[in-house]
Amino acid sequence: MAVRPPAATTNLLELARRFDRQNELTGIREATRERFYNQNLAAFFRWLEMEGLPLDLRVVGRDQVEAYLLWKRQRKLSPVTIQTYYRALRRFYHWLDEERYSDGDQLQGIRLPRTPKGERTLPTEKQLHQLLGQVSIIHRYRDTAILLLALDGNLRAGEIRGLVNEDVDISRRVLTVTGKGGKRRVVNIGFITSKALQDYIDRERQLSDHTIVILTQGGNPFTREGFSQVFRRIKARAGLKLRFHDLRHLGATDDALHMSPWELQAKLGHEDLRMTGRYVHLAQAYGQEKQAYSTGDRLLTR
Figure (cartoon, one colour):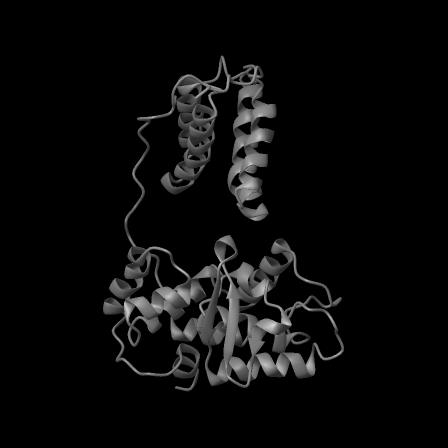
């Protein structure tokens, strides 16, 4: 079998463009490519230029990557943040080796600061009610539905933004969700969440013929930043420091009390049962009795 010779270029900007094109061909989402790979590689390239180093693979290897990560550490960045920068570079250099642009995987064996193993604190029921009490007056039905879809349906932000009309069956309280990698799954929601969704459709969205369910004031689909801004405003009015994803964590932890790990895995869209196991362990500390109805119905009717 003939071995394809490596391409002649050693320019890191051109190689990064080829890397991005290959990621797109393999189905990696645009948001992941941009936020995780492209932005982190661009930050590394800016540092190289600041140090007066050429963007040339023949010059930039393990020593330069270690110096970059050390510079990041000296700026008092957290171990988790440094790990993120490294993982993007690690994947890039591994791809360079796979495609024979480089001679061996140059970053193998780099040691990084350990990340803390403690779990994030779950939002409390009081905080949940605070959030729901601070939704926008103009868009209270939409914003309430958004919060409950994350809590009760365990939906990620991107999954909520991607819901289309045919994905929603309110009469059966069932959603068909498109998750990571374009994989589809069926998610059951409770009475309160389905009513909130119906109220939004009937009272705020009724005049729109757009196929996307959750829309901006102008009747358009949300961008990632626009959607994030909605939650930032709600939590600022509530005086809370939470991530939107914490609502999914709270709902999943509560679900773990009355679902089998396999049922919870299917609802969350996890490929690996070990990821779901984190919620089972959290649920043991969460300390609530098992009850066979939805998280939203249970937490919001006390």
